[in-house]
Amino acid sequence: MKEPQEVFDAYLAEKNLKATPQRRLILDTILKQKDHLSSEELYAKVKARDSSIGQATVYRTLKLLVDADIVEPLDFADGVTRYEPSYGEEHHDHLICTVCGKNIEILDPTIEKRQEQIAKEQGFKLSSHKMYLYGICNDCRKGK
Amino acid sequence: MKEPQEVFDAYLAEKNLKATPQRRLILDTILKQKDHLSSEELYAKVKARDSSIGQATVYRTLKLLVDADIVEPLDFADGVTRYEPSYGEEHHDHLICTVCGKNIEILDPTIEKRQEQIAKEQGFKLSSHKMYLYGICNDCRKGK
DNA sequence: AGTGTCAATGCAATTCATTATCATTTGTGG
DNA sequence: CCACAAATGATAATGAATTGCATTGACACT
Ligand SMILES: [Mn+2]
Ligand SMILES: [Mn+2]
Ligand SMILES: [Zn+2]
Ligand SMILES: [Zn+2]
View 1 (cartoon, protein in one colour):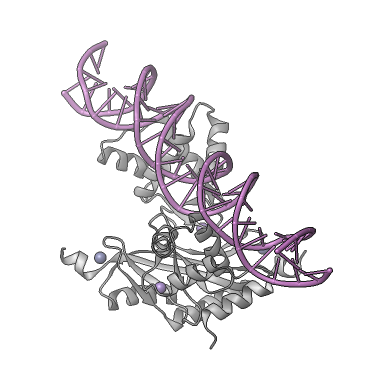
View 2: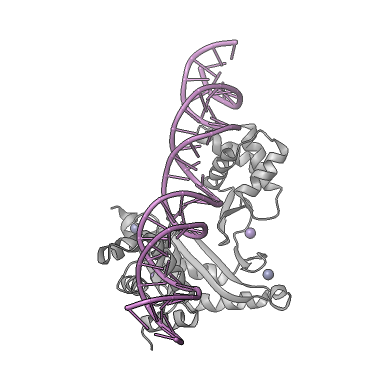
């Protein structure tokens, strides 16, 4: 499998866009990240490595990375869009604790199959889906 | 089953809030609606019936109605929150055409059951979920 | 090295949905 | 009817995300 950076380069080349140090740095930064970062949080990490980079470039690059299928936007219902690397990763959905924010990655083949089936039954060509399960985790439930 | 207006009145009374003509009118307007309206769209309909009502009151009332479990917020990924009456309605999710915006209500017992199960396996008390299937409808696919 | 061409950048300003502020009005229990 | 907390409408403010713009950079051809 190709490295994400290679995939990004190929994507940029194909779109007649340029591979810049900013774009490389932003991708590298998000790849090194375990958590699901917001644009703002990512910007802080990026800035720590190169303080000359602007917030807008982070937004612009994230959009490119999403379009290139290298990262995926997430909606944890906390008011900001979060992102996670998706290239080479298996698709998954999320189970989120609405108290502490903890989130668990889930993947259920039964559900995934039914989603495809439902779309087909309705004459739709399914292109994507979002599924978020919200609840309260064990720790938060029994207190603190 | 109680009427939604009764339920709203009871909710307001219980919270020491007031039943005002604006609130009643806003609820009545959204109940008469087939579509999934945004706050802005609802505001237009409300204003047609009473032009003195302000936009902020619509936002405030929608929040109350959501909290009272009478309407439900939706995310069709078009930049605005949409709402639909949910009191007395069976829960359902949505399949949305990303081209024309058409949406179909879906309910799959298998999926719903698995969601509960997954949460339980992870020690979560499930409180809600969001599931949106995005695709392109038959008309938009062959149409044009 | 010089030049032409565009895309990319950082910054600041802007957009747009949603919230907050506040002076005034209104619903409701007593 | 009264008192008074809550609600309202107008308006300003917020905050994430986008955009305009002057400048910079990368690359190609000379
Ligand atoms: Mn994840
Ligand atoms: Mn619906
Ligand atoms: Zn928790
Ligand atoms: Zn369509």
